[in-house]
Length: 283
Image 1: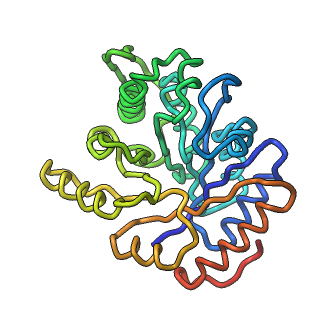
Image 2: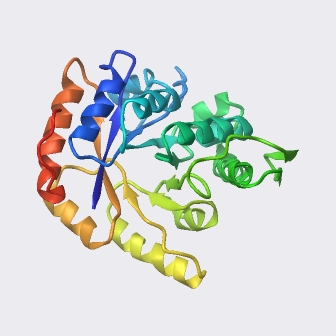
Image 3: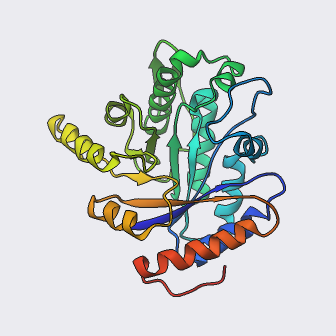
């Protein structure tokens, strides 16, 4: 099993380039950064409470931060965990992501989701009720741009073409799209426009992984890999997920003041060592 780190950083966090190097040296295969362009002041409140939401107000742009991390690492995969792709122009995002994949020599992982904050979607002009449908079309439109010399797309929310856009991603046919979420329709979404599933470790997730594989076989499609986000450092849970064939478990780090990212990274690095067999590295 592979292990990654998902960091809820903020503007006052330590240099993320140095953090990225520490994550790579500690034996993790990947680093993920979440996305919120903003938090509406009078909007929805996160289920985790105001303390979590306060951190989300201060998130850096994941794509710019990941570009900086890519420049100072060599093998570490860089990803969004997750990006609210419905809130972005798909033509511009296709170029941004392809450029990042080129710069990183094919190390980018695109985690996408609809987002919990309906007020945030509304601020971007996205009807919260249709945000999953908008996300689907944005992803499919980007895939068209990444894989065709002349791309066209005709949907209810996105329509263009024919257009030419370079660079193309370093990965073929494109960076893997990890569809986040645990809702009732998510498995069909993974098979429809995703390449992998990225749920949280909610009750029943192992059974749903089996269900996803069965649906893929019925549809004549490859069984999608699974990346579990924000997994606790619990040996029993990791063993269960490894037995279920989970490809990657992503542990969670949040910035709660000076030194907290570094301390949590050291604890997580020590936790994964028996599973990865990696030797202690500088953290």
